[in-house]
Length: 171
Figure 1 (spheres, rainbow, N blue to C red):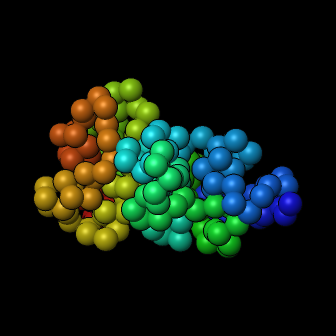
Figure 2 (cartoon, one colour; figure 1 turned 120 degrees about the horizontal axis):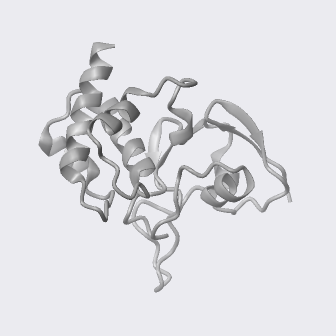
């Protein structure tokens, strides 16, 4: 089995021997101790595992469903498929003790209730702001529709995204 060197949150991280088809989420959480991305549903419907690979928001958990049919948007990235593309998780957003504007907005809007989904929510929101720097309510609703918050903090999530977008635009 090969050893991989992954660019995780700007730091080269070497895996132990692991099969190439091992899901990236398992490698990050279980082997490298990067626990921000969560395993939620395993079929790509909750978004708790959302992280960025090469600047794109990706679901890291997606597996086949119980009927063995492929899930839309392909399978989860495996450790062998990532190559040298940068991987950014929630842990990679802050600059030391200085929070990223999206993290600060989440705190200021008191978004988190239980907090389980929040890393995935934040990473998806950041991808939205990168694509649409001043998102409308409709843009936010469309982009975030597949990230589930069981606590129902959607109104606060929308407010935090708008606050973060404004802060990021102001520099």
